Image (cartoon, rainbow, N blue to C red; front, side, top):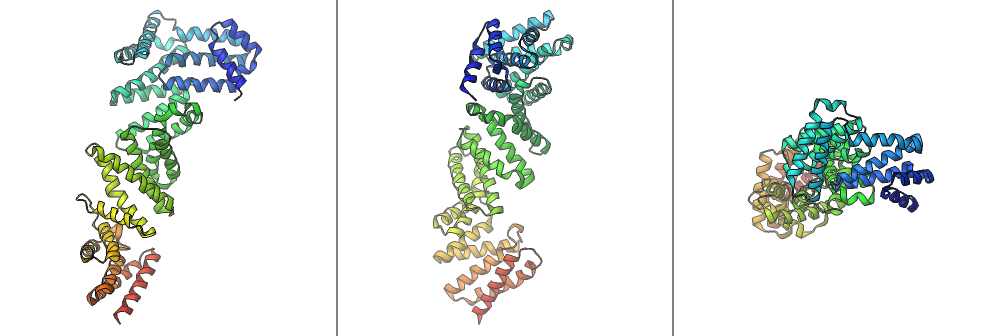
Length: 471
């Protein structure tokens, strides 16, 4: 956008004399171009996100003036705008106007000192009285939408304080009403607000209603990204960044890979370009680790493995500071994710530190995956030859195979056979070799009934090798 147009728009907005505004519009028709309108629309979003609703309303009236001048010409546009200005500031019904004026006074007092929360709730009570009045349906449309927009913004503000089901439902109700009306200037912020609120409702309802999260993400994608793409708005839109990232993650959990790349991209933005509070940062970190791990397992991207491990370690260090508060996140990272990722990287890169760290987590008392610990100890036995590691790995792997744990059905018998063969090479104990052959002979027929041909070939190769070693 040209600096000349930006300067003209600024001069126009600061002009207080209506005649001066009119002369500027007659002299500079580019002021009522769509480009100028978009600039003012962006400024409105800034003011609304900083809760400066009075300034946002003033700019909304200015943009309406420019739109009328573009569509009707300057003279007729001014005349129609003055009519709308009267409608926006007056209902034409004395007792409603009296309440409206009181609302404006209360909001001004609240915005001057945000500690005066009582003023906000008094304003909300009066606004709802206006909206519930039988004569409200007779007021001019501009005034009616002004009341609804105020209700949407004020209830969203109140919900941040109350965090109750009632305040959430009220916020959603009035945000929807605002979007349904002809308040096109307010739409980006209202759409982003509604998306944020619907995601909160989705989480409060137990993460089960996929229609809620689909609607939320569609709203955020449509409206929030218009705010984010403007560099001077980026810092103001951080709450919507977090909402969009978490919404994409929720969709990914429902649909698996369809939203995975987009979810990862926005989670990275959320934690790298912004500074979410501790709890939110941990939530996003943990979910990002899970998403990166999933992409690694499905697409074999080594860089995703490294990033997932680094973020998981960061998350664990942060969560340990307040174990009780973040117990679920700590468990997700320490038990479900990081040990498996470290074992995988050790097998790929041979990093001993990864193996030791993985086994350290697995040996903690709350670890509940004995097969994983067995695999880790088997790997360490092959490096160090410690008999205690062999005995424990043998015990854990054998027990897991007997239980026929589905997650490990395909490869656990092969890993046990390889462990027994390694022990035979170190000790010469023939019964280990006999057990390895028996395990593979029992397992290969079952593998032939599956689609995992790679594991089948490895098992057949290991069986041939074990039989040769027995001769």
